[in-house]
Length: 571
Image (cartoon, rainbow, N blue to C red):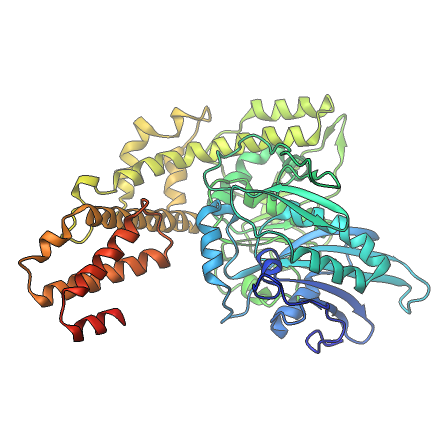
C-alpha cells in the first residue's frame, strides 16, 4: 500500500475553528505508522497517518528497520521500546510554534530539531494463517517530543485494540488526538483517547529539578475519571540501573563527558531503556551528543559510527545484535548487559573488565573499559538502594531516590559554572539607551578554576575526588559546548531585553528635537529592527514596552515629510 495515495486515509473533516487540518495532532506527533513484515519486501509501512505526512524514502526505510527487534532478540508476545533517527537534510518544522514551546520547556524536554523519536509496540505471535507461521506487526508513534512515558502509556491503550480491529480503530485514535490541546509547559491537560482520559502535566523550565510528583487536579465534570500519569518523560531508573548500581558514578561521568558508549543488551526494550536512562542521568543538564536507544546495522549512520579510520564519535548506542561486538572492539566503553540475575536476595552487579577481554562470541556481561573515575563512589547510596531492594521497597520509590541523587550530583557540578557564567554578565547600570548593549565577557577556563577551591561542588556534595580534573575533561566535551552556547544565548537575549526597556524609559521625543532628519530616520529603523528581532526571538519584555515603542515610532514618523512617512510605514 502506498501511504500517500489517499486510500485508507482517515476521513478527517476541516476543523470548524479555522485551524489547519491535523495542527493539534502534529503538535504531539509527526505521524503514526503501522509496520508489517512482507515476505517479498521485508519490513514495510502498511499504514501511515496523517495521509499527507511528508516522510522521505530514507526516513521510511529507517523507521521500518528500527520498528522490529532483530532476529537475535527472540521477542515473542508484545514488546515495547524506543528509537531515535536523524531527519533528512532540508526538512523544516513549524518554527514559531516550536520556538514558543522550547522557550518555556526544560532544555532536556525541548522538541527535537534534527531527529525524530520513535515509540514502538511490537507484537509477534504464532499464526497458522500466515506463511511464515507468525503474526508480526508494529504500531509506531513518531514524534519530536521526548515524552517516553506518555507515548508508551498511550501505546498500551491503543495497540492491543488496534491489533484486534486494525485500521478503523487507528483512524478514530488519530482524530481524537487531533482534538487534544497543544502541549504548553506548566499546564495540566486532560487527553481523551479510546474511552480513557489521561491527565498529564507538561513540565516547565521554571519547575524545581527533582520536584514533587504530579498530583491529581479537580476533574468533577470529566467522565470517565482521568487516569493520572505522574510524569510524561521519566523512566524507571532503578530497573535500568539495577545491575550496575556499584558503577553508577562511572556511568554518570562517562555520560557527562560525552564519551562514546555502546550498550549491548538482550532486547530492544533493555537497550532503549538503558540508553535513555544514561542520557537522563545528567539532568537538568542537556545531553548534547547523539544517542540512539536502539541501533541496527541497517541504520544510515552505521558506517559513520563504526569507521575505524578516526576516533569513535560522541554517541551512546544501544544494540542487540552480537555482530556489533566485533564492530565496536575499538570503542573505549562497552556495557554488555545480560538477563538480570540474583546473588542471594540482591541483583548481581556487573564487573569492570579490560577491553581486551571482549570476545566476538560468548562475551560475558560486564563493563569493558579502562576508564578511571575522577570522583569516589557513593557507597551510602548503594547500601540504601540494596537495603530497599531487600525490603521490597517499590521500584518507583527506588527510582525517586536514585533520580534525586543524580540531580543533586549534576547540580553540584553545574552550579559553580552557572555562578561564574553569571559574573560575566555586564552590570545593569552599564546598559544605556544611546549605546549598543555591552558585551558579555569571554569565558576563561583558568579564571573559573581559581573559583573552584572556595565555591566549588564540595559546598553542596559530599563526594570526594578530583573535581578539577573532571572540569578540565568536561571543557573538551560537546556537553560543555552545548551548555555554554545555550547560556550565552539566554544572557544575550536578556541584554537585548534590558536595552529595549532602558530605551523605552528614555526621553526619546526630547532626543529627536535637535536631531537631523537622517538621524531620526536612522533611530526609527534601528528601533524597528530591534523590535522585530525581539518578536522573532520571543523575548520576554516588561508589560507595555513593545506597545510604547511602537507608538513612539508611529508618532515620530508623522513628523517627517510625506514621502519618508510612506517609505517608513511600508519598510
